[in-house]
Length: 405
Image (cartoon, rainbow, N blue to C red; front, side, top):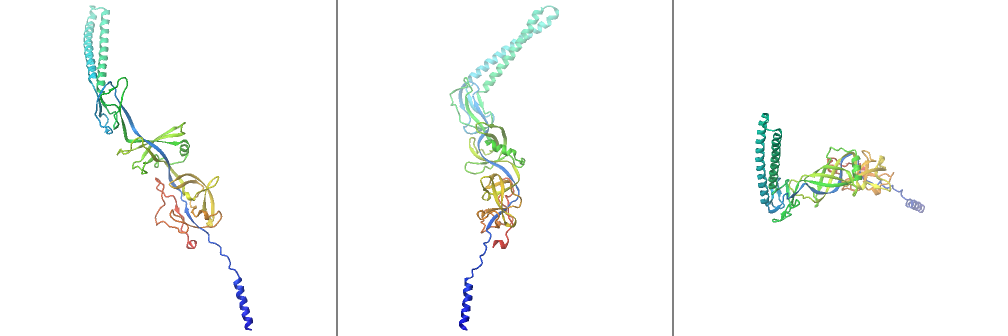
């Protein structure tokens, strides 16, 4: 009997050991998602421009003579009308004296002619003077008056030329290097260049944009009043200049040599730290685009034809959505079509997601992974595009405790 019981127990144990456990289905993979919220972003273009003076005037010798001295200090700021050079005035003074003497003679001749004409007018009614003599007297008076006017003009011209012996700044700005040394003969046959004065407050920023980009931006339904035309200047050392430029000129002609459209902005330069001729990187705001979505670049995938994203849809099932990307901006893609408010775009863990597969969505932040999601502090916002004042998107709703398991 004992032997029979032992055999039965052994058989039960062997059957129990030979039965395999039921396989356990793997848990859906965790992915980081970002809930899409439509926002308004600034339409910006990063371009390269060159600084140029607001006004630039060549200072030239307008009268012939020997350059006596330079009055200003090279590279200094001068005001309009400040004396810069002096030209030997001796020859010009002599010319003025000669013109003044000719004017005095013309004035005397005019006075004599007027007296003769007045006598002829008095005698004309009495028939003591012929009509021919009267006409001659009146003609002499008119000729003498004309000669006097010419003499006065010659004197005024000589005075002006003498004034040009003192060369003054035509505009306010920074005077450049002296081009001619003292003792040189200037203004002989041509207006000799002496120096250049550049107004560097404000400055012009000259840059260009491809005709394709220019046409595309003009065709966008943009809000032109909200910050449009603002240009930030990035200096060669990477710093952003504390003064912003304002777009003031936009050409409508495409340069056939470059295929680009010329643009220009005005940049305040009160401390005169920036100098003309420097190449700078600029960030031009051309308007505000409303109703778009900002998607991290890691979430945007591409195939041979389109760009698309993976979305955690109804029942946490992965859905493929084709999108239209406008441009990259601040590490994100600006998406104008293909997404709807509330879509949960998969940003991290994308390789684990497959269309129609079920996933476990958890909130995504830039410094988090799907396995260790980091939630932002209460009240914190996503990084905003400069100039918009709005966040890119808000995180998805926190996952339940069951999902986190």
